[in-house]
Image (tube, rainbow, N blue to C red; front, side):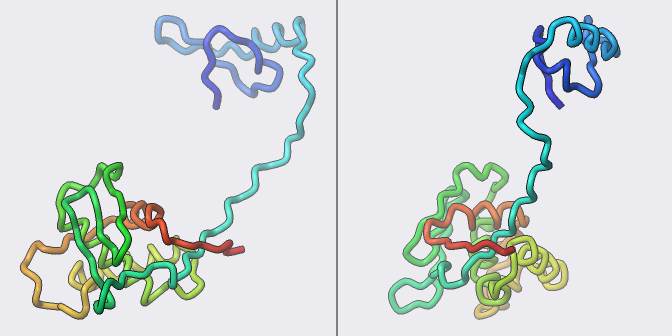
Length: 180
């Protein structure tokens, strides 16, 4: 789908051409074909091979090091803008869907749990599916098994898969390999 204004550069390859007049669409395909026949573009054909599917990203568990000092896991939620993940900082300022630090804490727990449970050669969509299944069954407390029942209600909120993936993609130590 291309939206063009006042330009007929693609009339010769268009399947359908719609013209907008006063916000009302009109089928102008026949008119466009006449223009394309009268004024050839002399564009060379660059091939019509279909786009290749993206290869699956497989995160390497070892690249998600949440340790700091003597602690195996050190997570620090700094509001909705930053997650301390071990010695790393994950900048979440552009993840506008986050509205509370409890979501940031949930993301940290989700990354650690995903690393420990599912980053064994699985592609990112599979990992996110498994995380959703866990959260559907057990709720956000499942993200912090060492402290189950010790957290104050509301300290962890369930993160959506999109924010978990956004945080993972912003982790500077993340290494991925091609899943094909």
